[in-house]
Picture 1 (cartoon, rainbow, N blue to C red):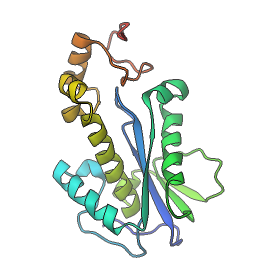
Picture 2: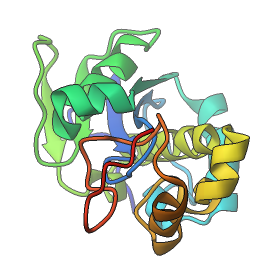
Picture 3: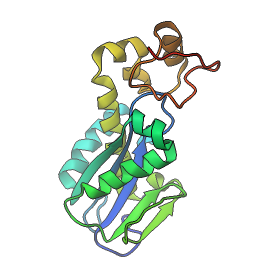
Picture 4: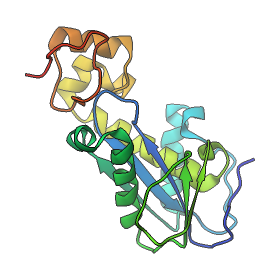
Length: 199
């Protein structure tokens, strides 16, 4: 049973990301403030849900949330500042996009770096413990999956509709065959034996 609140503050924002381990595409973060005492029987860590369940829950979250926002950091930004700092950047963009100022931030994971005065806590595997983080995980995952499917030619060649840019055999075989795209992260090891892949 996931919990509805950690801090006691009403405007507690759950924050999670998707795409840190991908070879291509942005890292995406979402921030969600749910109503006090909120509950939903299906809401859970997005990795524990089917694609259909995530899509259904996305609509529920968008309707039920007090407010929500999504932020991204691009492949170029990932290459420039590294994936950890790019994740913080995406999280801050999501927080900044909220229509209401959160009183408390609940971050999925074991670390966070910020200049914000807002108090926060890092919760390891928080997307399986707190509803607001689970909601953020669903929004971040579904937003990112849709984005990766929007590049019709690349998505078809590299299998992004299936692998969302993660380093599957299908994806790496396509990189070996076709080379890399501008959407790939140049600072990542795209193939086990890194080659000058960028055109």
